[in-house]
Amino acid sequence: MARTDTTSVALAADDTNDLLRFITCGSVDDGKSTLLGRLLFDAGMVPDDQLAALARDSRRRHADVPDLLDFSLLTDGLDAERQQGITIDVAYRYFHTAHRNFIVADCPGHEQYTRNMATGASNAELALVLVDARKGLLPQTRRHTYICALLGIRQVVLAVNKMDLVGFREDIYQAIATEYRALAKSLGIATVHELPVVALTGENVGRRSACMPWYQGACLLETLESVETMMAEPTDFRMPVQWVSRPDPSFRGYAGTLCGGRVMVGDEIVVQPGMQRARVERIVTADGDLEQAVAGQAVTLTLDREIDVSRGDVIADVACPAPVADQFAAHVLWMGEEALLPNRRYWLKIGTCTVTARVTSIKHKVDVNTQAELAARRLDLNEVGYCNIDLDHAVAFEAYATNHTLGGFILIDRQSHATVACGMLDFALRRAANVHWQHFDLDKAARSLSKGQRSRCLWFTGLSGAGKSTIANLVERRLHALGYHTYMLDGDNLRHGLNKDLGFTSEARVENVRRVAEVAHLMVDAGLIVLVCVISPFRDERRFARDLFTEDEFIEVFVDTSLEDCERRDPKGLYRKARSGAIRNFTGIDSPYEIPERPDLHLLTHGTRAEQLAEQVVDHLLAGAGLQQDG
Image (cartoon, rainbow, N blue to C red; front, side):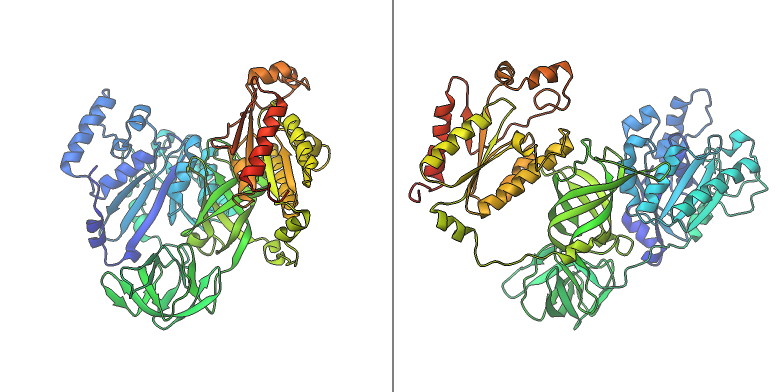
């Protein structure tokens, strides 16, 4: 297929209002690629050389039907797709007619590629949903429709395909259309245009069909040309700052794309999440200055005075600023191969702002086939959950229903940098505005000074039976003898009280470490030297613990003992139980331990007495942390 470049697309219509972005979706083998290929053909977008190549490829695939043109070959571009006869990736196609420009996202039908489908739906204004007339509505049809509704699509064209295989029966078509309208209504989809088609032969695709005289409506191409886009444009001025432009000392501008409203020279604005005010002095573009800019335009704003503006800030109308919060309720579509674990930290990107975030709770997950709300402790690949999210600092936002740019976000894994989820903000949690920091006159420095020491956190990590608690106990005894004020937080002991409600699943281990780290942080703030002994098997949670403290307050001690040595010692008999299957999710057996990459202190226990290892820790603490002169 010869793709139309963006220049020819731009010339095909008078203005960008004639552009329709839509998505094709439905279940596997419903005929999405064939329909789209036929649509391109009927729109006159397949040059002669591509048509000749299509004829050759079709003869190779369908040797028994030499005159058949397999239009799916125009759109299934990946080799894997052609070999399997399915769509895997999202393929974007550009075409136009005399009446309208189109950008279509051809999306995969298989359930395991739901994340790809969501990517295509995120910028679409309309969904073209295909249903095989022989099969009716399938679970994947419902899944795709639900995700389209979740991502803000409020208009659907329902194409009931393969009508030739059911004898062009009107009753079958009407039953499917009636059932789908009920589904769409339950999901909040305002408008459904339905029509019967045969994608393979083009019945009701680019021309009206004589095979179904009972259908008197428009063909598919006419429907797409005439539908009105229904995406409501945000009316309030919003511009996320993408970068600060300083080409020379005399110029400071703030570049970004307006995601709502309009701005004029002289308008008073506010920079969020703070409340700094200024007036717009210039609206600068590559083609010269403008008097005003509207949503969708990329511009650089200069202000009448210098204020602190950075990438990720939002410039807004001072009369109607965006809400600001650090806790939200949101729908999350999980795209990661590994499950979403509540309280694990991820990077959250919203607009141009990236912050650290964690899902504090999963209120429920949604069965996207039935829309039933189900209890859940985690989200697996392609599952949708309604969650509470906590950020490390406040951001300017809008509800996704109001503004997709400031209401939509992605979650990024902090280790692999892979995008693992997309989400849609619903509202700020009330407690985000009601809870504030209370100031007290005495601080950590004063409390430490009264004890004659500098507070620290010694974090002992390693496999069960490695000797963490034994070494930490010796370290505390030594520090106590030297006159230091200490406290021991042992993982097993804490599970009798603070963490009594937690099990040993990955989700529970994440929460276990979070609670212990927060308690250790409070004790360091109280001026104590805190010794923490927890397996803490995951690097991300150990990094979370480290990030709670200043750079020199946290000392990670890796007690390095081989699994064989731990099993040989097995002081609590846990490894024997784990090997026999009596204990599940046991670290080192059926649950992973992620070895520290750069611990502050690496204790190799093989052939070394616990007393010697404890002295290494004390020496490191006294020398490296500067305690010796204070003790």
